[in-house]
Length: 160
Image (cartoon, rainbow, N blue to C red):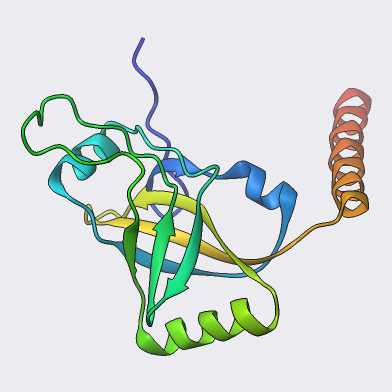
């Protein structure tokens, strides 16, 4: 049986989702950024093979780069392959780059990739979250809330 293609409400085909980011970080805001990719990377993404769980974004020289994102090699592109964990430039407007750089340097925030997806037009995009790291007690609180919501839904379903 073939894998179902994951799509969200906007018709975007989700390639990779960083679910652990919402547990480990308090996401304050997010923005959409384009990615500079090579041809074999796009082919690999279309197959749905990418991991952004351990990746992060960093501002350098007035530009933003995605670091440690794993896009495995596309085997059919033997001569013109790519490095799986290379730094990839993100396409963001200059004003947003300045804001993000200030937020990271002064306020101690982190740029975390949340989703990697294709738009309905077929363009690869990255949802980037501006986040603050959670402390251990905050993570426990999040887990308690999630467990209670699950139990509450189970109780309501059983009682009718």
